[in-house]
Image (cartoon, rainbow, N blue to C red; front, side, top):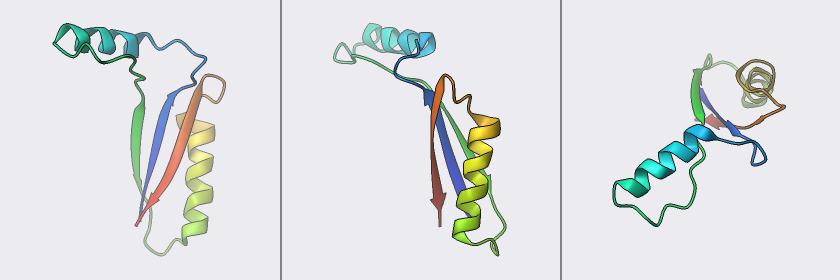
Length: 81
């Protein structure tokens, strides 16, 4: 079983890296790009015998306690079958 955690800045937090990417895209002929938010993706492999609910609980804890800074970042957890 695999899990995917996507971490990205909260909307209220400035994202200078995303702004630089958006500006670069506009400079490369994509003027319709209004905004870019840059984040991180983590894929975690879990033992196949772990139940889906156990996996969700563990990955949620990992995301909240280790991979994301809940003060300035949001995250999304997906369990991939």
